[in-house]
Length: 170
Image 1: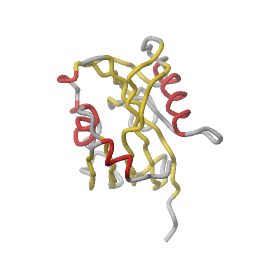
Image 2: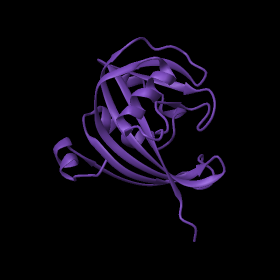
Image 3: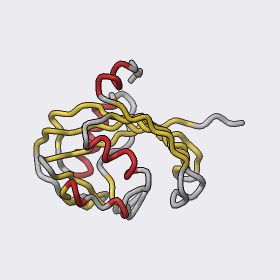
Image 4: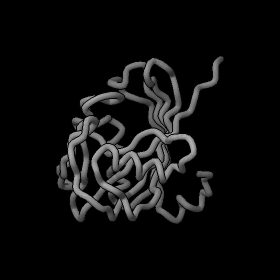
């Protein structure tokens, strides 16, 4: 059996008080869904540098204060290839700039009690509320060939100290 390629990705959860910034994907992977901001790590950059760069490219916001709050390994199809998408989740609490529409994303601020989970990937309603409540997440998600089909999920939700004590190699 052929070994799957791993692609490191990031996701920035941008908050301003009781609001969260999300965007509608206008093209590419997960087009027409609502998501946070992020993307693939480029050669030579750290995963945190990738998060900052991708967030700025996708929405015009430069994260200035953030912390790592999760890791989710997706087993899925990406551009016709079965891969692992390793997603490093960051909670962004301070930033510079204002959200702007780009070729890739249409941003919108949402109240924390009005997050449009019905327009997001199904697993987001499992882990995102935990992150917003200050928890950390580690998870595995396996999608069938069609991401619309219910995925097989396994999540470990924990407090930050327990999370950091796991000594995960980043």
